Amino acid sequence: MAFRRLPRKRRSVFPLLVLVGWWWIAAAGCTALPPFAGETPPLPAPGEIPDTREGGSRLPPLLSLDDACRIAGENNPDFNALFHSVAAAEARYRQALGAYLPELHVGFAAGQNLVDRGNLVNPQPATIPFASNFDTDLTAQAGLLLFDGLRREFGALAARGEAAATAEDRRDAFRKLRRSVACAFCDALLADALLAVADADVEFQRSCLEQAKVRYRNGFIAERDYLGFRIDLNRALVRLVSARSRREVTRCALAALMGCRSGALPPETRLLPPPGTPAERSAVPIDFYLELALLRRPDLAAARLRRRIARYREFQGIGAFAPVVNLVAGGGSYLRAQGGREYVLGYGLIADWQLLPLWTRWQRLRELREERSIARLRAVAVEIAALSEVESAYSVRESAAEALGFYRESLAWVRRQRELVAVEYWSGDVTITRLRGAQNDLVGAESGCAAALAEFCKAEARLLAAVGGEW
Image (cartoon, rainbow, N blue to C red; front, side, top):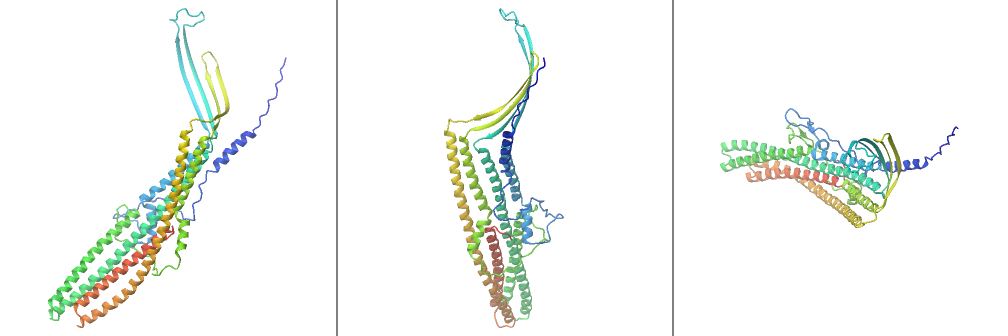
């Protein structure tokens, strides 16, 4: 008699497609990092540290402020370490996305059991006195987390926010690095200007000493006046030595920020002063800078992101009170000593809901809520500090611009006065004391004007850094 095979009942694949689609959408929603606040240029990637040792200089012969900031961004070791911090944060975010992937475990076992029943008292008739069993097991088990109270989703969102906040921290470090480089660059330019002033003073004192030597030999001036010229020359030489030392120190500080291995700029590298800036008070009100800082400061963006991360962590703590649902499937192949091989295949859902104890999870939720409050207050503190920095930088910039205008005006008068006093002295109308005073006034005016210009440039750099701007 022939048996007719019954048709197999078709199973709907619609639930499986819905499950796969939900998992894909949930994972895709967490794959792209959020855009950063404001339009900011890309940061330089770590580059090769310039070797400024003799024979290996790779710095341009004329170094501008923009070049110095660019080289510092590429080669400063402390700043380059933040590049890897951002990469590590992005890796942690992608690691959090791994919770959406299924798990697969494969196992294998092989062994032999030796049984000796020869010493049994009154054994059963069918008892085998000695037996040897060799078994092999091959198993595979797969699992997919379906629901865990959205802890997985909020964990991925928190990791994504942490990666974005770390990137904002790197931008903030670059902002501070450029500010430091600008201030060091201005100090180096000031040292060059003071060296030029000291050189000019030495040349003037030497010229005066040569003329005084001739007049002293001819009996036109007394010995005390002649010795006064020698004293003034030595004083000018001391200023020259101090100016040279200050120049080397400031160039070493700039080289350290730029990441130079030798810690010093090569002697042939010259610093280009920034374009001439009018010493005028800003026509832009302070409110504009305050609004610009709120929009562009990377530390404010990082604080806002961490405040959002704390909220995600709190939601993740709430999800600890929800059940956990897993989809599992497994199978295996078992070789038995009795003969033959067994095959097992199974699948199903596993739901686990921990009801007690609640104490630990409740206290963890309270901790996360307190951390959210801390993040909120820290964001407020960062905003207050940023606005205060803008206010102070704006005030310093305005004062520096006004002071620089006075110094430039006075310098023109002092130069004219020294020229007139020098002519009057050599014609015998004024004393040497008046000539010394005029020369000292000129040296002080030139040094003060150079210092005021450097302070104004540093104030400009601090104001631009305070609003998160560019040079």
